[in-house]
Image (cartoon, rainbow, N blue to C red; front, side):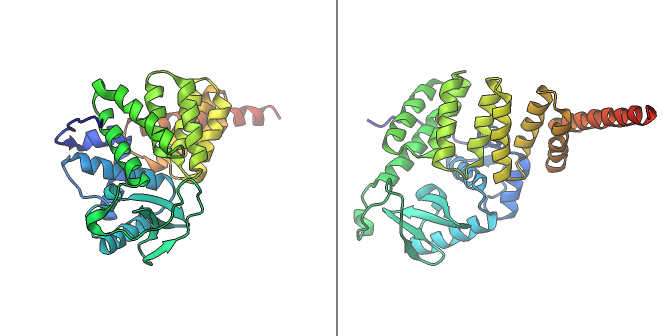
Length: 304
């Protein structure tokens, strides 16, 4: 039997940034692109939509392509909020395509696409508006949203965990569920389980920068710094402007005593996030390294 819970009535902007682990600049960028509306308070549906935007952005699809796909999907399907009502997948080059009523659809061209994934391919059928059936993709989406709701309450995190487990039995390659379940285990300090799920997410979706970033974090926690650095490198290769990945990679290099390798990542973080306490720390670390390099060069010069 589905678990009924009541989500919060509203979330502040700071709540949204904290829950979704967003940088204020990223949310502001979506607002400028017309993907989100500037608000003081947000509903749970807003939270779900922004979470989907975060996941799509981590897969290297541009804000312009997301906006074009959403606008087109609204026109051809009549959906008010395609990011919440349909399963969106960034898997056709730079285009946003949707899985809807069992079919893979490019809303811009209004074409049905061949689905070469044997896990999700199914015969297409004519579906009338008054007799839409709950297909597997819709079940997965509803379970995912239910688990996200349950995560919002400390008393129901264990129930959220079970919903994610059940969802992954139904759809083993659902990368966002791997990430969220892995994060539950990470917060419980079950780092081995978290690592397995983050790795599973990177295999399910190799373009998912967040999966590599979270994998780097858990490897860092396990003191496997060279492996963590490789994971951060993957995240940055996918999204060069991934400020937090640059920051954590710089820290990992510092802990390995490789300060020169840390320097470009401290500088990248300062460039990407120039205001705030983390930027202040990154700038301070960069100055220390540069000062040390200057002294070293002077010493070598003097000894000639």
